[in-house]
Length: 484
Ligand code: BG6
Image (cartoon, rainbow, N blue to C red; front, side, top):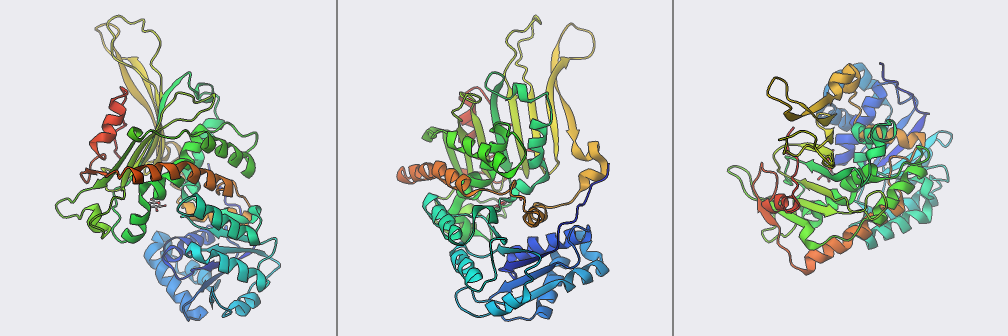
């Protein structure tokens, strides 16, 4: 098996916020890897644009250092790096004034694909979009890439959509949710729609419940100001977990294309039911021996923002009616792991005398860090002593099954940027999807704010607050263990 790298067409990519953290940590190192793999044609140009005074030489130096720091082993390829760096340019641009726009116009080639990455605060989206047009830099063929957070509620998301829509059509707008760029997240669709085995069972007749866990070991230190204003619900659930939920729950699209897939995802979000308050558990990590508490990390001693959330939600449609979806995510938990578990119902009747244990098939899909799948099946315990049953996993880590191909290090950002150049929006969120997600999230947030709910404290390195365990326990279920 050999991975196939299909080069994209020649392009000019302008990164507004080209000197910022995301550009230095993710976007440029990612593009460098695509360049090394042969996917980014040599004539293509990357133009950093930001407020700071600098020339292209200075920018090249800055990015050389960034790639050395964040580029991993590939950064050691000095020849490759020199060639890549040659393709970088820089323009000092004032988003709110006239400075730099003419230079940018003169630099861009209009006979290749043009993409504009808005790696800046959303408050600047409108100014950038407007100036790109008034300076005749962007046209109907241009593409614009925007980052999360896309709004902080329905109203702000609508306003952002409206701002962008003044200047760009929906098929030009690429809203990034980097979870959609992850290899295994796409694998969810392959597993569901590329196999006969699972789809017939994928409904409320056979599935007892579904668990989605995205656990992190990091805290919020360093980004406390942003995070304290967001919390786990806005930071993770409204986007990443919601996307996972959609991919797991959606109906099969007729074809794998951008609108067919996004239409189906949208239907899932719109079918999500409001949640009872006792089906929401919010938590905050406490201080540990050498590690500050959430409130210290966030520098807000009175914060009620959640660094953990667990929810029980339901999708009101024929396929899923009555099946709980349990979602949880949090910082400073026991392990870094993202997993989706489809827990099937108990068998209706056991023919084995004396076997009172509950046996359940569970399909667990590990998204990160050890990508793979396990199917828990029940078999006879080996040896004499009658028919005793045990549950064992059919275990497949993709690294074992696929060998070197599984080591494809393509990171979500690089994959997504290449999709922008290809003009493929399948792995990007459509405006109506984002709005629907906020429309579901907003009342939940307003609810706990009105009730003055205080997040439950949890120990660092744990699985979150006890109440989250209880939420499932009450229904005779239990969370999967959080482990790598
Ligand atoms: C980001 C969130 O979108 O995703 C972060 O803002 C979070 O808080 C991160 O840590 C998780 O991404 P990943 O790829 O490390 O799972």
